Each structure stands twice: as C-alpha cells, then as structure tokens.
Picture 1 (tube, rainbow, N blue to C red):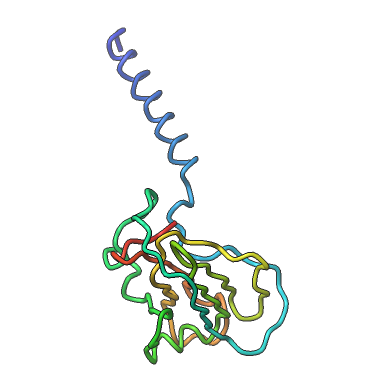
Picture 2: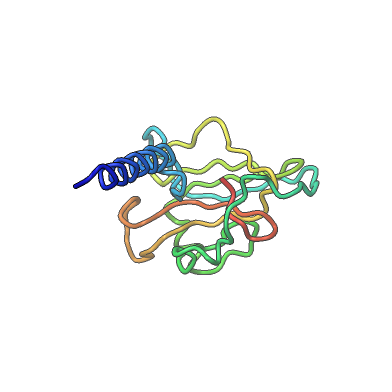
Amino acid sequence: MGPRGLTVLSIAGIAGLLFGVVGWKQGGTDLVAAPPVPASSSSAPAATSSPSATATAPVPAGAGPLLSSMPYASFAYQVWPGPVSADGKLAMSRWKLTVTRQAGGIAVQAAEDGQSMASVSHFYPGGAKVYILDSDLSASSPGATDEGLEVTNAQGQVLP
C-alpha cells in the first residue's frame, strides 16, 4: 500500500468516525413512545379536552414527515379529537390521556395504564390530532406491544 492508498483510507476512516458521532448524537430522535412516567395505579383510561382559544399556528420548524408515510402508520389510531374508532378505543384502553386545546396548539398529558401521568403536560405548537400507536390490539398488558403516542399538525406532519 502506497502513500495514496494510506491517505484514502485515512480520509475514509475519519469520515466514518464523523458520521458515527453525528448519528450517535441524533440517536433516538425518531422514537414514537412517550417517555416512561413513575409508576402508580389508576383505574379507568380517559380522554378529555377543554376548549379555549383556537388560534392556528404556522407549521413549526421541527415538523416531521407525514404520519401516513411512516412505517407505523398502519397501527396509528386517532384518539383526539373524536370520534374514536373501535380499534382506537381498544388501543386507548391501556392509556390515560388528557388533551387541552390552547392558543397556538395543544397540551397533552399521557401515560400507559398503571403509570401516573406527569404533572406537566407537553405543549405541541400547531398540534391538531393525537394518535395512539399499538401494533397488537389483542395484547392485554401495557408495554406488551409497540405502543406510543404521536401528535400531528393540521397537515398530518408528525410533531416532535
């Protein structure tokens, strides 16, 4: 191996290292599940909403791809705003969910059944719809399937 070969291999190695560092730093940015919340017990799942100002916000810079283009779109069930389909109700049966419309978006509090809801809700600027993800509606226990929560804007783009 000559000096040119060694130079090419060195450049390729450095580029690979840089790509690896960037990928590692961005790891987990496409996760769909809500972060775990400290455990406690609760009885019935509920989806509630409270109306307030309904302003339309511009699409946030962080809006992602269309939910319909995501690989998990086939097991995303719209649960807010209603009406909720039978499959959506089944997917939501293992969740506690509160959605509050606010100026410029929605605030969402969610937890899988058996966990307490966080005392602070997550605000989604431009949020319009909430989906529960559940790849196996027949599973009877929380966390037994690929479960999660997604919020989209009015254009159907996934919000971070």
